Image (cartoon, rainbow, N blue to C red; front, side):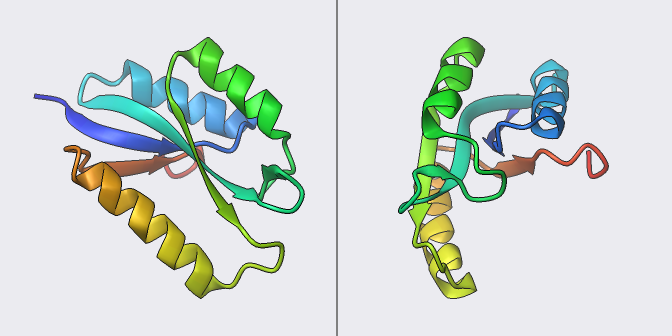
Length: 106
């Protein structure tokens, strides 16, 4: 049985390469993409990618996209609280892992 995971998606090339590897790995079932966005600018917090582009990428990949919106000057506490609540929701749906897009960590 495959481990159900959510993939933390930045929309960048390293994230795309790591996602491709996760999708091809028979140990995992990637059930969704998860991105942290800046609520003021409506862009990915890490790279500034527009949300419309993320939505187009998710549609092309055929995976649902979940966005966590944090304030412009988000603290670690805010990020942790929002990410924790989102991951707990995934856990209640049988998701047991989370992958990130750093090709060096894969």
